[in-house]
Length: 323
Image (cartoon, rainbow, N blue to C red; front, side, top):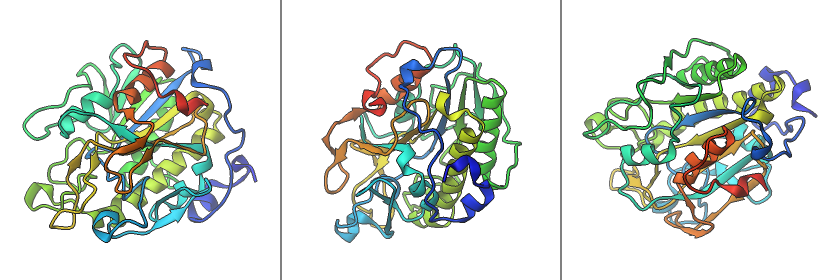
């Protein structure tokens, strides 16, 4: 049944629903003209664990696979974390890149500078707060000239929580003519629940249980609603939607049951904008520590966004997304 004929509330309330986005996009990103191409970047600030999101390893030792199970998706043989049921039902319209990597230090500010394109010259806004203080420095990549917009749009289909309001506001801005919107899901990793799951004390108390209780359910609802809504409004074909963090997490749990910084291998989601959905790009090793096939430099994320928006990329974009 085409998704455009399904009431969005019923779709989002049925976690295991199996419906397809109407009008599967077959055009490549390069076919979108500069005047019509759009982009929404969901910046999963903190660095989500690849094992607890888009690249679980159900057969790995418990100290690697972590505490959660995994769900089958609409891509045969591809599983994601069990707490993303709505995303699993849309996975045939989403591409997972599972082998992002860079060779610099696994620091928040380093990764943020790498994955964000230079968008100062484009019509670009930030939903939420500008990226703030990270471990002794302020990450660059989001110019002070780029305006910040408060997430004021409330749509119960997205959820009334912060990620839902942010994604609903991003959709509204795109519909109003904005070309590029970055959603900062958190402006810092200090003293708040983020994907930065060290399970430490004090300012770094986020833990994997927060993925189960808060982060994954909210993101699952907001992200799925965003794709459905963009499609219903005829905007998904021209709008590249990227969900990415600035790094991954260690393949082994630390002594507290959390995961620390890791830049050797992590995952991201791409949809819309000519992306060929229903595929995984790259294959990680048994512990998601390093790429086994098709290593993707993290800078290619920024290059892919830049090319879609008509900017010359500094490195090769991720061409496999559009094949």
